[in-house]
Amino acid sequence: MLRPERMIGSPKCNALDGQIVWSPTKSLWFSAHFLIAVISQPWQFGWDAALVSCMLTVITLCCGHSVGMHRLLIHRSFRCPLWLEYGLVTAGTLVGMGGPRRMTSFHEFRDWSQRQTKCHPFFIHKSGVLLDALWNLHCECRLIHPPTFCPEPAITESRYYRWLDRYWMATQLPLAMLLLLCGGWEWCVAGTSVRIVTSLVGHWGVGYLAHNYGPMTWVVEGASVQGHNVPGLGLLTMGEAWHNNHHAFPESARLGLAWYQPDPGWWFVCVLKRLGLAWEVQLPEHHPPRCELQPAAMNAVTITPRSVTIRPTATTSADHSQSDPVAARTPACAGRRDTLGA
Image 1 (cartoon, rainbow, N blue to C red):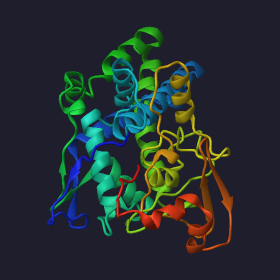
Image 2 (cartoon, helix red, strand yellow; image 1 turned 90 degrees about the vertical axis):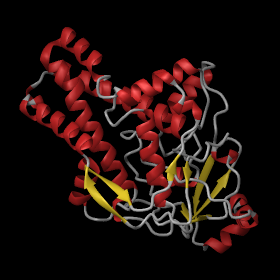
Image 3 (cartoon, one colour; image 1 turned 135 degrees about the vertical axis):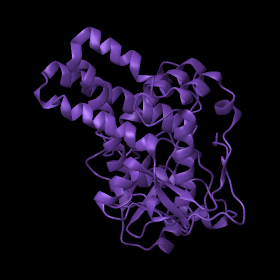
Image 4 (cartoon, one colour; image 1 turned 120 degrees about the vertical axis):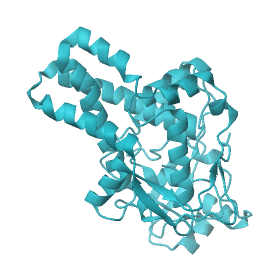
């Protein structure tokens, strides 16, 4: 089950030429919650407010953003009942980055740019940590000749998704009111503004680290941006830190492919599958061969029916094509370019 192609390009499309402009929606939304959080002095809140904030952050990031938005809606790495999909995507919307169409558009636009041979510095994450944070938290990149975003009917024709896209900011209100009634102002601020700021900064931070630092098991040849696995951040990022794995196998529901790569998002998918609420769960061995996907020089990866094991080696990429079953198949494929992950 591969996700549909949503970015329709043309000979004029160019991922390099464009300009970075201030995004009022993104900037004012982040700034407002940042000011509320700072003025409220959350460091003086009680442990109960901190616990509420942490619990809601984990639930919305893991079940909502990582599983609902990223692995399910965007990459279609598994299937589930529609009511559950709506619930998971709603939880992902509560993270505070946008509704389903907005998030899918941003993801596809960035991925399309990153898999071109050259792309705008906005998508490369190598302009310095402070400038990159400013760009990603307050600005957007507008290409001169962008591709056309064409989402599938499951997104465009869903009344609920259209409503969620239109009122994604307002979805915070019911939760904020509930927190206010249950725990007062401290719970309300900790569970909304502090959580949103933490999630937005964390999302940018993971993207910055995962495109700059950490080992690489795979290389996507011809792509201007490569993903890295960031050791030590698997649990904190719900598995999203294993970004090199994700670039290699974007439709896989499992991001942490080795036993030492914890992936809470994958654990949650496994629970859903055991309960009969998830099926057609995609794994790396289900991916068709990709000509551009090659093992990195210092690693070899073996795909087995149940897992992916990584073993260090000092051989070159050419040597891997003889010893690794996936690498051995890639030269024979006919120039297929899958989308990258994010």
